[in-house]
Image (cartoon, rainbow, N blue to C red; front, side, top):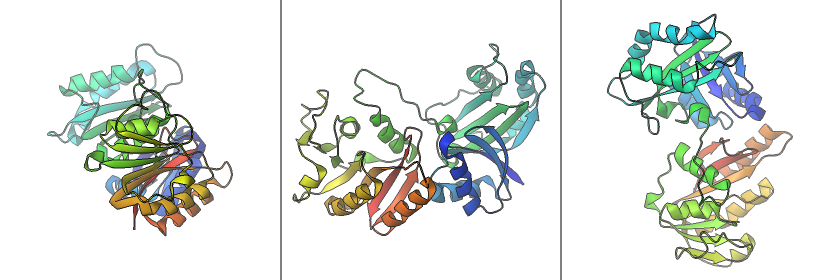
Length: 336
């Protein structure tokens, strides 16, 4: 049997495993490493697991293989044990590809002599290689918990996200308009969306302008629809046209856009119906990026129902509960 570790939001862990069980019927939950990180075993190999989860699961945020498990009795032994098993790690690395070491520690007691950076630096030094943190082609995943060290090596494209545990963290700066920016940035990063081939975008419910700013930074001309004011940081940008009205008020116009985005706080089904109406504005091969707000009850049933409605009108390219989503999922669509 093969083991792998999946990560989800702590509120959706059971839903994530339900999805895995549905599409990988022989999967068995082995243990909980933490509230949102679990070990699963199945007969499928990791590439098969990755393909199934990537194409079918919404609530699984990140996966990594477990190639072998080491045991330790004391936290002070961890570095020595990793050093003694370096050849095992080395044998699984593709030598001509860049890598990143990603460690997640769940120790019973605090230890100032060991942390993620210390372990990552030690592995890099022992391998005599420089880690490529931003765009690694492969990842050495190390998860340490309850006297066990789980180690797996995989190409980053099979982990669903190249960020440790799918925790996509962006640096805040003085130009930040709202945290909502991170949702769109994460979608672009995790789904590997290339916006350079697009020229125009429509942002529904744009104020204060976080998503509009991200689109502008990707060299798009943006029509921002919202009765509220846009941030002074973008309002005078020559590539922004601010339509001061509701999304419903813009329907009478007849423009076409390469990208339409929708992060409005509204009922999920109303939001879907609005996107069905707005599909006439999307150009051929254009993208729709939207968030679906989740209810607190029957969340999985509601999500499946919403995705089925969308499937009748769009090609769903991606659908996932991302790190910056909180109680929502991000969906990327193309018109049928």
